[in-house]
Length: 260
Image (tube, rainbow, N blue to C red; front, side, top):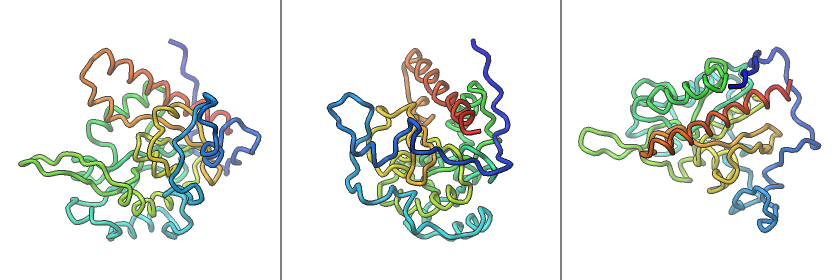
């Protein structure tokens, strides 16, 4: 196995300039205008290309710090998910982190413990990050939706996917997190995070491993959600997909190295 390069520091002592327009990454607007017949990797067209993605709406929460934002979010009633969840699960990490990992929503264990990615998918994410040479403690980890949406089956609470309206309302908080941290790289893990960050309802498979640019000029790396790996029953396919996920995460170091 090739030696994994030293990725430190993950924290910024000084702001890092955003990539200029000459770089190879494409903006979301440019992708929306790509010719689907050209064979190039494209995203599905947004239903409203004149409207920014949910996480980049101009009216996100205006708190001056993550601590203040977290306190404000605790009383969120922007959608009905707060009614049945145990608690809000806010992002976790350092405001100096250069990379923000965005998932879908808290799971059952996250809802009970109040921290993101501490259940089975979180343990697998930690394992894959480590294999890719990434220290999770040097990342900021959050979700597109902050309350656990579930279906009650007896004593079990089964995951239910947030709908577009819930994602749009909760993007009020995600957008503010990204504004306050101002990372060099955002990693969209799965379809819900992809929608919150691009406004597009499909395209994860096609754009997986590719780097896009958000409306703010921040690099956006697209990959799967680790929970997808846990649902695969075929061991060979699961191993193959996990190696591909690690390969995607390994690009974090390559991208941050270019940004220093």
